[in-house]
Length: 153
Image (tube, rainbow, N blue to C red; front, side, top):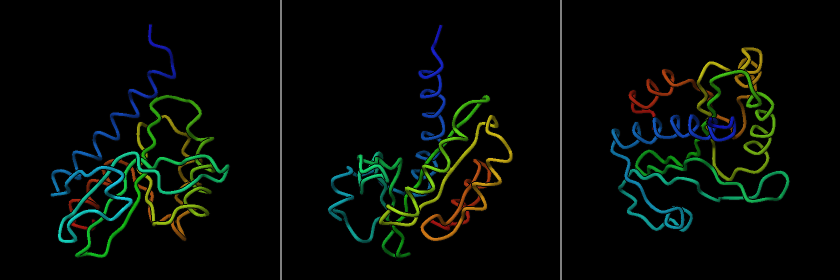
């Protein structure tokens, strides 16, 4: 029997894998988080890195952003945070913490990709209403797919 924490990590990984595959299909090249942080990459390339420590959280602990991407030709530096909730659980309660970190601590604009269908619709609506400042968008998987496929990043 798989405990709920382990299952949440496995299903959360599904969303991260989905985002990564979209980036790869759209010609993004993976680089190390150190190379991303130090701008150690070809300025002509579209690059991404995973689990990037760009700053501290509102609690002053290390924050590892799920993805950080750069596309110099489009002048894009963007963070992507992924949240998957397949059944009723605690992800809804984590939204305010994530939004505060993005708005108060992130050195780059960020988007949130959420899916799984288990989050409360009221929480999703609240999250969408938080767009502003460094939180530039909130997408579900189909919306994010369209966003990427329309060459927005």
